[in-house]
Image (cartoon, rainbow, N blue to C red; front, side, top):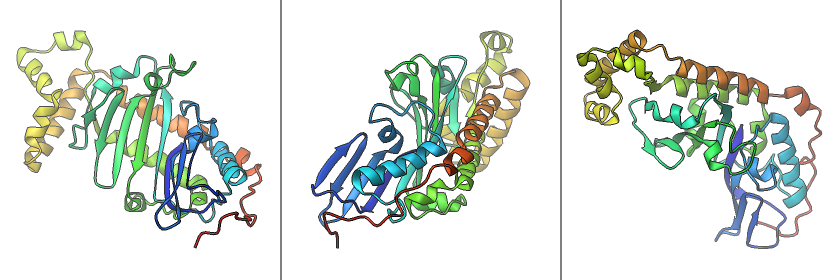
Length: 288
């Protein structure tokens, strides 16, 4: 569930100023302190990919490996930002679901090569085709949809009830449960418009025009300055969808997220792993 990570005040026992290691970039800044950023999930996989499931126990193993390989102590490594999310397997190409995502809240988002992202001041919501991004089997043909939150500023996650200051705080299974709630809430805030060709054909001319309006992000952008008008139209849209479409896409995505999050919280297995970063590191380079 944890993926990207950044820390502006990391301490390691590296003697070099810049180091790229299996998905992590570590650089000594002008103040003599190391900055660290990159994918912890990819680091755990030897830098190859982050398309498979990443369990709580895997994350704990990652923290052990960080200590063993570069002397990074998770108990004293500040968290300045991170990403969390899940890879869920859909019955069809994830692009079909992504195309049907019109809005998150009132934000039409931005389209890139593999999905959509919705940027805000303190965080970014991303949903994309992980199978299209990963060129390694069985993930490339796995119809994997990635649903992810990038925490750009820690105030966002604090407002969501998650308090973490150092890397090891992210080991708390209650934090992972909170991540599940945040992902589900985010999907609930989304507007999906998913009509079959037959359902579209059955619409009256007037309703077909209304369908085309609702499915067009520009329609919502024009309404955005008028909050009351936007809210009224959003309610009408939800009723329209409920009346004329039998799609369960949104509900299905939420169910898949719920099931995957529960699966990834393998608390018993994680508890059996002995942490090794409590030891005092013999630093080769003293950082002041």
